[in-house]
Figure 1 (tube, helix red, strand yellow):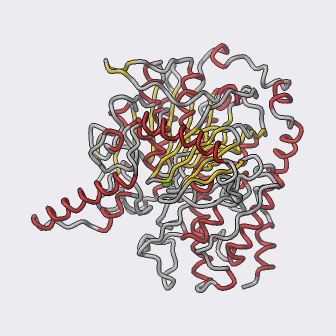
Figure 2: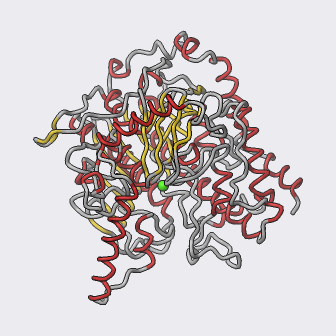
Figure 3: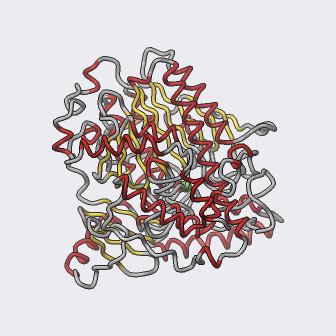
Length: 570
Ligand SMILES: [Ca+2]
């Protein structure tokens, strides 16, 4: 290992640094929060819908990426496109997702909590309404609601909120679709048990030159070209699978990162943390969490070359996505829509600690024939400075970068600590479109929206925010209420943290604040009841029983699950 050399290389020619320095200065000049911003010309911009043509909306989400993995959030990974997007817009430092692919997508698309939309867990039907495994008929998607208001709609990428017709994108308000209906797949081909589709037609053969990130982008670029020819504005949702496992990247992208992670996860965490503080993404008062107790010190880690390569491929997956987002933004510019388009970017959950059976130190990740993941120790670095991962609702599982750019409305190079959640994106889209969230749709009552519009934040104002935000995934539970966060890792008890003083969740205040705990547990219980949450120990037991019956049935009929089908829950 030659850490010094690598240190230098990480800093050299780092395209992330210039825009960051600019936005930092800009941020400082606007600091003072809402008061300073309210005095800026951007806050005085006319209401968007009063300015003529309603804006287009492009919503981009990626898959299994940690809070610190973008250049504009402290990473060494080269993401010049997203850094520039941030320099032209606003970065949120306290924006939340739902800890896992399916529940996040259900919440994002509907403005509800995932359980209310029928996707309390994943896409398997667990026999209860909140866990039916596809979007129910009591919710509307952004596409359905905004299309009713005269927008054109299209989607490219990972759907993962309904495996079968009639629960596909075109069944839920999108006019055009191309992408992966199901969860994770090989990046160079579509795995057995997974479906790649164009509109309503499954595509069996995606060809020999397929790379999923590029394919999703090709589709989005085509859709922007086509939809921009209409007189009406468009809403386009792009859902990348990058950097979800397997670790599959193109050789030219991997080459940019080969050897850069010889510094190891401990040094990487320290460097990212330092940069995040310098940039104002995290507060210097919050201590960096200790290394995950189940991770080894890098100095003691075996297979360093392989481990370094795992992170290099992960970085390459993000790098390619950033290049491809560059193509999407270039297309928006080419069709003359840049000034009148709101672009948003976020991740569906935090870095993922899951291991893959294909992880083998004798096999370098990257090519089509491999099926590996970067593992817990690197996920720990991705989620710097927070605790835990995808699945859990401590900050490492649910914190996402969130960037929004809208020329003339959002002040460039700004940052906000206002708390937001991805269920806010539905009412935001409707707000900027001048549309109302429907009370009924196709003759059926619609569950009232839970999200709250982010438009005031975009305009530099302080919004009222949520009285409380709640989470439940696989029995992991949390409530965020003002500066307080109550959180529990299944099957453990409640922990209480002061997020202003300790967002890295290091000092549990539950024992010294029993009244606050009691109050917030009551908020959680009422929310869980209202949303149809079934305790995980009950649901999982029922699920295991059902799976057991299925297995017995499959054995009887000679059926056999493929390894890919077994991965279908991911
Ligand atoms: Ca995910």
